[in-house]
Image 1 (cartoon, rainbow, N blue to C red):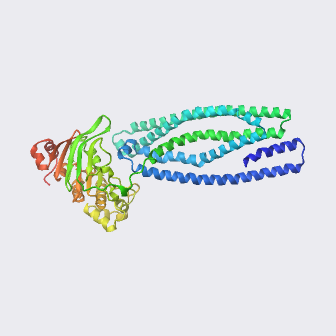
Image 2 (tube, one colour; image 1 turned 30 degrees about the horizontal axis):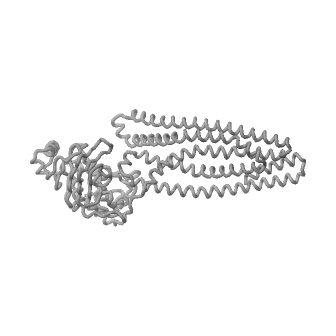
Image 3 (cartoon, helix red, strand yellow; image 1 turned 180 degrees about the horizontal axis):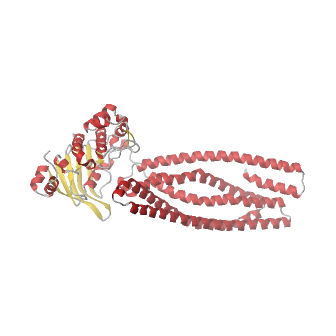
Length: 545
């Protein structure tokens, strides 16, 4: 509709030059008003439709991203960092949303306007079109020059933004520790360095855009000059009227906005493309196997054969480990820090596959077993237990959405947590987590053990699950652990050797290898590595109880 404006204005020029009747000009002006109203209505309708399309697409992309991110291997999540994932689902989504709301409709409209305007120039006279196309080589070279520099720059900006966000998260969440060790200035400097890195990349982007616009202005000048010269020549030859030449010049001038918009949208498109690639990189991962198609373990016996593992090539942390855990047996893993205990526990839990060797639970690789919430076999509890924001009852029902209040209380009572839970301001309805009632380390771990009881997995792996309790609550929490794992096959990475002493069997690890295995009494009598650990540990503790 907008393309009707230029010939109508050219008609007014011809009427004025030929001293036509005033009524003819009035009619032309009325048509101009009608065109403006029609164009406004059509534009509003188009924006509404394309916004609906874009927002629906974005919503689905967000949902797929979160779904796939929750299914990523934990080692990948830990390597990327919380800041990276947060930046992807916030800043990157915002860039894409802005492109969808504004850039996509503008680009569609601009491309359509360019094609139709060039067609209109050809209808006026093919020579007007030939003159207008003089600007195309300059614009094409400008676009190529820009894209080749913008793509890597914007990708670098997104990575730098993620690093900045990660540093901010580390600094803010770790502020009590930073104050305790007087590291405020050091971390303030790190935040400043990350921020300046982002700022320098942003300034590079500004300089790039300025060079982009400068080249576009040269193309506009060349094209408009060519159209005006062509119009002057055609009027002198009598091949076109002044109104036709005016319409051609106005047509080319009207191309400034859509052509610049289409090319400038390359800026938004490159930035949004960098963000989209980071989202799709997660969202486009293949979905996990259907829970209904997951394999079922033929028991809970664990067989580890010839397992070696390295987080980085050439830096193994496990070496040729062989271990069997019989069904119903409670095995404790002990050893110094860095011995490979947590790595072995993660491999048995199926969090990641071993680099070499095999791990089987009931004859099935643990990664192929279904999640605990869907009747799976293995559950892992670490010392880093998260309390989700919301009522305490909802937090417990993560393990069993259909659990009744009575079952929740029974699970809490079994781990000696019912008394303090009922003493909370609103009992099980008390809001806990961020923005709510804060739970200390011992209570957080008791909550995790209560979830474990509700989930009722046959195989349990506890990775230093009492480490955050502190000395005061350690004994009580160890009793709670014993009740929670009673009747299950259990692998316990023992933070305190009193836990190991109560196990059916103790496995001692050192430097990524199993060096001893046996009961508490057998290993003490052997006077080996475990006996040394026990002697050093018991010298400063009352082990009589």
